[in-house]
Length: 349
Image 1: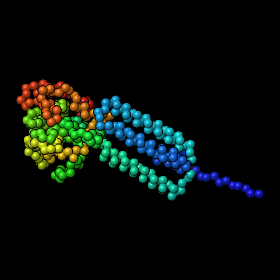
Image 2: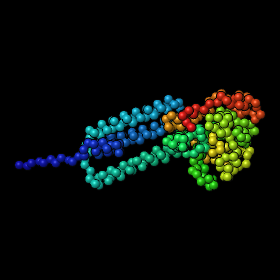
Image 3: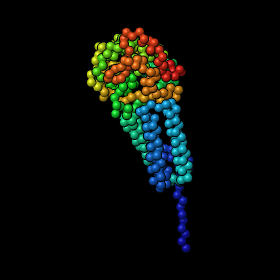
């Protein structure tokens, strides 16, 4: 008489399966023989991450409510995803792994996150958008770095590399630059500066104003605000009056060539910009700084600066850029500049 002995397969405790599912979504399903379900769980997480980054990096102005709504939607989708994943994984059993099995699982985890990091941190940063930390005082108080007054936080910005795929930078835009030829300046080459002068224009500085073709630049309204020396702004100064006056300087006034831009920091005394390294070629501009994305109380659209107030002077306009500018000797200059208000948080310093 034959006796059939069935040997039970050793399986992992269910909590081990949950840990494995958190390390690599879908791994429990794959180990249980459900390859199709495991693949769907894996690529669903990658798709959610890409979707969130894409939505928060849309190169168009978003209201504060819309930006928060996108973040809430993403968090809600992630919660639903992980709850569903863990419930589904808990119902399955996985074979117990030996030392070699756990080594391979660890190797698979590292490989998975390396690939995902390459997709999110390299490909998306290059072709869609990137988030940057504000490191210096060059754009203060528009962009605020970590300092003795704000030691626990600094602004993080979203730079859209899609913004200028089908259009050119406009006056007043804050742009991201990559500069490689300035060996005299031993600092990172990624800079955020504001576009002041456009191709074919003559740029000069008569503190605290920027002159475009001999006339004071007051619109977009941010330029009037900076020149008013109010709310933390210091006005524009020449390179000799800046903190970096010993660095290489250009001679002003300067006329810009084709596809050249003149960029300045909002905090002129603390900024290294076109006063020092000259006009910027179009190819050095990698994208537009669209918004501040953190901390929460500083979230705002930087492109809103263009529409803070009506144009200062409806009669005066620049042919190349449709930017209103006020004559240098106009007695109405200060009266027109006073109403300009920046949407900077009162808690910011």
